[in-house]
Amino acid sequence: MSTGRGSRVMGRPAWTLGLMLVAGAAPAALAAQVRVLPDPMPSKIADANYAAGRLMKSGVASQFDSLGVTPMARVGDSVTVYLFPDGNNMGRTVHARITRRQRFLPPPSWRAACDEVAHPGWFYGLKPASRALFGVIVPGVFPHPVIRPLPVVARDGAFQFFHVVGDSSWQRYLGFRKPPTDRASEYMSRDFWGPNNDARWSQLKMFGVRGPRGRNYVAVSFALRDDYPETPNTARTWIIDAWGYPVATAVGQIDIYGTVDQGGIDAVVTSSGLIRWNGTQWLIPPVYSEEPCLYHRTMPLPAGARP
Image 1 (cartoon, rainbow, N blue to C red):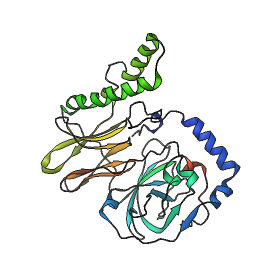
Image 2 (image 1 turned 90 degrees about the vertical axis):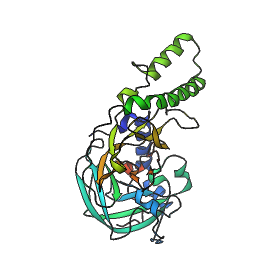
Image 3 (image 1 turned 30 degrees about the vertical axis):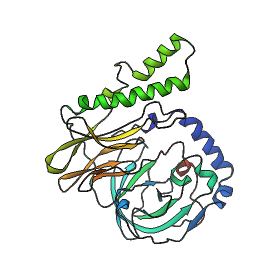
Image 4 (image 1 turned 30 degrees about the horizontal axis):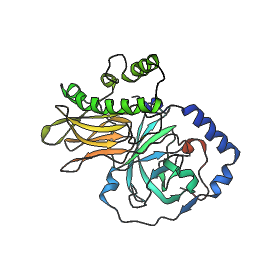
């Protein structure tokens, strides 16, 4: 199943080339600034159940965690690895154990550029080890995600809420670009709102989710013109009820792959972790942009990390 990763941020080829040049020119110098520390063994807290890691090119898992209090797993814990052999389409599902955990502290200069290994986090060794262009690691043992059908009226019912976000995003985008002519403004409008004048809402991929008490929900994530500086962000991740009302929301866009059964209630498998029902509400993991950070693909593992 496709993740749509390539369409999320414009300018990826330039960033990829730039980071590859940096990696090729001075990887040793950059690695020398990195600190990889022994495991400080923080107490396990509930938020860790919603975290996720990424599979680096080296086969080591990395996890963003700026405070160092929510590692997704301990040594000996089981994890599920969803592999994307070509970087875009999910292939195998692998169950592994954590064999080593280390605290990772990059130089501050990395943090201004991107997330992932450019921010403090964790490194994990996995057994069996896996290799893929991209991979998502979640704590626990889960099957391959499935795609469930949507409640009949959910998409149409949620459009009114989406349109509010879309209109606000359009006004900010218009103010940022300041088109000099009516023709330029009209071109921008067609580009933003799309052929159906719905900001491509009808084309968004949505995922049915089984909720508590037999209720059905929808998971969806989207971004509107996130290729320029702005506050607040125009990207959202929503859990929507059967009538289209958003019941949980987070700022930021993530890739959604499907759902896995947890005793009759689904967990939603995403690139940022698992969206889960905690007994009273849907909890969405923190949404971190992985772009334009491609260090985990273009750079060797920093010195001191030996899973």
